[in-house]
Image (tube, rainbow over all chains, first blue to last red):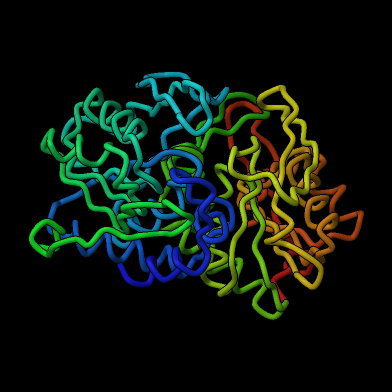
Length: 199
Length: 199
């Protein structure tokens, strides 16, 4: 997705060989027009898949997830990392280890909002080792729903999360794939049309 | 806002005299079409105010904040309740006590994204005692920005947060004002046109 890659090139800050900071437009500051375009792109890719729910995780998944849900005309549900005091009945949980924050979170959704018969599009901001994606897949599957695919804004292709998901048979659509952050330089992966899931 | 009130009446769950659960469309499950209408409503009310940024707080403020920012054509920034490992320089912080979660959070924004010259519209999902709103106002003011107003999806008018903000001279636009949750019943406040800020 060219608009996204342009933004990453212009505003992304390489903090190390593995950390890309994009908090001017995705993780803290949010560019609503870019999110609109991202939602449109996901909806275009999954428009024929009879998606019934978009599932994401707080906080940085909410903006792209909301726009994808809006364009697909379905509700969004965001999994919580911490339990709310007003949220207790029928909770489905999964454990997710965050390498960035070096802690394990129990993420949860209410079984009232995702259930058998749902066809779920999972959306998240980043895909690196895949921990959050697997946690969301587990939530959806525990709820009895089918996972249609995983839509990612930025995939760090030099980490193996995306590869493992694809090998396990999940459809993964990443709007930007980063091959390397070495030497402070952002290098995008060249994606062949055949594997780009642009059908 | 009639669409919102209808949704609250149909799906809101009164958990006690002070707690209204709306996690089917705002706090956990999110209705993108309602968020779109909410964004439109805020943009209509603040369209003439030369807003330069929308400021909200994770997680439940992000969806209405994003849609308001999209319709106003400005960036959104969401304050974080916990510091990110990749976010350290130029942080502006404020302390907020959550009565719901019974804990104090240090909320923060990067001074890179809000600064002198900005005219900020603050958006949040709920206004009860006003702690989060004051925290966001403090962040904006510490950053040197001007606060144009506080846009709230649901105000609990039986708590004094909104009254205090208005008495201190802040413009507060609440799309639904709840007068009472007593006896398990949701009663909306009748808002006179003159005080409704519909200009």
